[in-house]
Image (cartoon, rainbow, N blue to C red; front, side, top):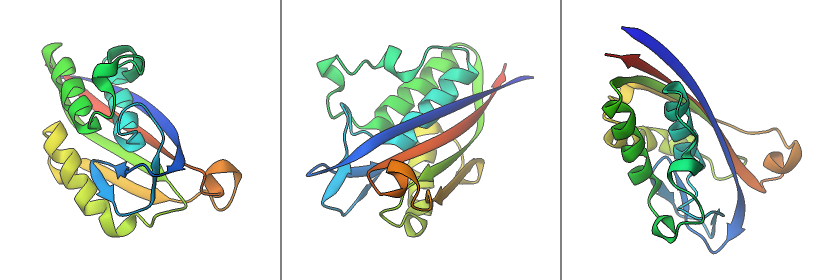
Length: 159
């Protein structure tokens, strides 16, 4: 089997009055991420990592923020579509690993729930999904709690 690695990154500003969704899990907050879809930056980073490993264009190419069909869409649906797309090309998703950078809310208590949601959307087992949370130690917009970002890598195997 030939293996391919992809990297993804996404960042969204925090705004009042929007739901906060990360890794397919909704958090009970009075703020959320600003974006055309549900703005789940973790899931968007995973989508880009998977697409990149298959040498495909980024998430914006497949799901443009100018298309009303994707307004407030659940990013888990986007992730399922990305996995289906690379599967059609003869790839199997082997594993993913991601880090979320957020000052708030505390993510550690919800990481297992997030992994379970991502496992359902990718077809991976929970132990094939690496997921960590960190802060930006007060540095920059991330450190001031103005945004949340995520980095992700994905490994694909070509059948």
